[in-house]
Amino acid sequence: MKPRVLVVDDDPHVGELLSLYAARDGFTVETVPDGAAALEAVRRQPPDLVILDLNLPNMDGLDVCRQLRSGSDRWLPIIMLTARDEEADRVVGLELGADDYVTKPFSPREVVARIKAVLRRAGAPPADDGTGVFIPAVGLEIRPQGRRVWVGGQEVALAPREYDLLLCLARNPGRVFTRDALLDQVWGYDFFGDPRTVDVHIRRLRRKLPEPAASCIETVWGVGYRFEVPAS
Image (tube, rainbow, N blue to C red):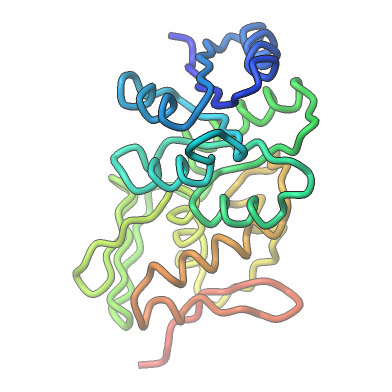
């Protein structure tokens, strides 16, 4: 079955262009013009990936992303389309759980390449080799089967890249990872986006994880991040 891509953009030219190029690479593309139609399309038949313009009528792309990430479709890969002057919105979108972004004007070949890369990462998370993590000192348990996380006996809901990032760090306590190393380990070598994506996901992880687990993710200034287990 061909992978299905949902393009959400009120510019019909964008949908036509992406449909043409994606079809050449074996994708089926559905296009919708606004956020309400996007949520209905996902409810009716969830796609394999969503390409989401941030500047939509009535309900903007950030609201659509927020709703998708708060419901049963929170695992759905999302690539945002943004204008070059929307850096703040890109950061917010990444914080809400978008997997990647493309700035307008864009090359349709680049967008198709990003679709393939995001779907590869979604289908085979590079940080997950089946080994779980249990750290009694902070009550953290990570179970790769089902990709689930508990802290202090309470389950914590994480988006896909948040889970992969936590698993990578927690499996290597004390090791310092640069941003580039985390991009390679978690996002994959073919990630096209901004290295600051790592910082955004680290902030989200710290907000979602209760203490003391959140404090285990330490910033190594000028270098990157590490997972440090407190001494008992």
